[in-house]
Length: 323
Ligand SMILES: Cc1cc2nc3c(=O)[nH]c(=O)nc-3n(C[C@H](O)[C@H](O)[C@H](O)COP(=O)(O)OP(=O)(O)OC[C@H]3O[C@@H](n4cnc5c(N)ncnc54)[C@H](O)[C@@H]3O)c2cc1C
Ligand code: SF4
Image (cartoon, rainbow, N blue to C red):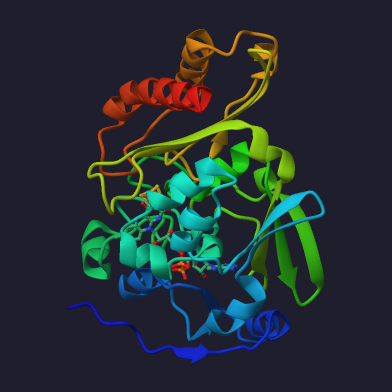
C-alpha cells in the first residue's frame, strides 16, 4: 500500500488567508478535492510540508450565477454539481459528466480540474518504478523518455473542462497577496509539462467567467478513452460555432490530451460564411489532424490516436450542429 507522506494541512477561512499561507509557507500546495494531488503525493511527485486546504472556502467559492454578461463559476463547484447545474453551457455539463467516476466527480472541483497536473506514462508511476527507469525532466531527472534528446517535458494536459472553456472563450480570475488579475484562459496554459500554467506559487484560481453569448453557440464535447467510465482522456476536444441563417459566423475548436497545452486550432477565420453542414465538420477534422501530433506520452498508441482524431472531430461537430 502506498502511504501519504507526512504533511501539515492548513485550513484558511478566506481567500485572503489562503494566499497569505501560500506566500508564507514556501513549497506549500493547494488541496481542493484532493482527487489528483493526493495520489501524486503518494507517488512522490511533489515534496511539500504544507497543504492549504480550500474546503473552508466553499461558501465563498461554490456558485453558478449570471452577472455582468458572464456566467460565473466558483472554483470550488464540484464537477458533479456542474454536470447538473451548468446546463446553460451544454458542452461543459457534458464534459463534467464524463470526468472520472461518480465519487471522484463529487470530490473533484472545477479549480482543481483546470489546474490539474499534466500526465505521462513515465511519471504517473510509483517512486520505485521511476527510480528503476532513471527518472525524467519532470521530476528528479535530466532527460525525457518520450522525446529522445528533448529539452522540454511534453506530458499531456488531461483536464476535460479545459478544451470546452477554451472553445467558449472563458477567462479566469486569479488572486494572490498582490491583488487579483483576470486572464483569458487561452493565456493561462503553457507548453511545458513540468508546470503548464502561468499560476504563481502563491496564487489561487477563484473563478471562471464564460461570456453569456456562449449560451447561444452550437457546442459539443468529444472524448476518447479506453473505458466508458473512469478513464482519463486519450483525446478530448470541444467545438463552439456561431451559426446564423444556416451559415457559420465563427468557430472555435480546441483539442487536448496531446501536449502540455490544450491546442486551439489555428486559422479557422476563413470558415465564416460557409454552410453549417457536414462539409464544415470534414474541414475542421482535416485541419485538426494537420495541427495535432499525438506522442507516446500516454499509454495509448499515438498512431491510433492520430487516426481517430478526425473521426472524433467530425462526430463532435456534427453533434453540435444537430442540437
Ligand atoms: C481514477 C481517476 C480518473 C480521473 N479521470 C479524469 C478524467 O477523466 N478527466 C479529468 O479531467 N480528470 C480526471 N481525473 C482527475 C481529477 O479527479 C479531476 O481532474 C478533478 O477535477 C480534480 O479536482 P480536485 O479538486 O480533486 O483537484 P486537486 O487534486 O485538489 O488539485 C489538483 C491540482 O490543482 C491545484 N489546485 C486545485 N484547486 C486550485 C485552485 N483553486 N487554485 C489553484 N490551484 C488549485 C492543486 O494544488 C493540484 O496541483 C481523474 C482522477 C482519478 C483518480
Ligand atoms: S514527457 Fe518526458 S519529461 Fe515529461 S513526464 Fe513524460 S518522460 Fe518525463
